[in-house]
Amino acid sequence: MSEKYIVKAFNADELAFEAGSRLSMNVVMVGAVSGYLPIPKETLLESIKALVPQKMVEVNLRAFEAGKQKVEES
Image (cartoon, rainbow, N blue to C red; front, side, top):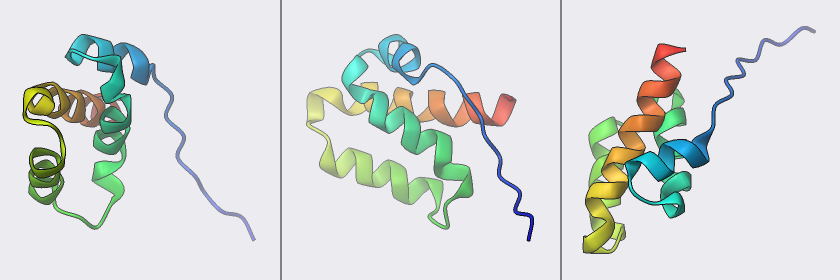
């Protein structure tokens, strides 16, 4: 049986840094896989807003979008 996998490589640390904090690298990765998840984008964004400290919300939203965009363009 042959299975097909899609592998996309990029520098998530760099995208997180550009978004405002290297600590948001995990959110970059959530954005990157979001198109493959059965969870609506808005649900993921609302979760970020609810779970991330207020001072880091904008950074994490930018990180999410950066990861999503990177995968979509490659």
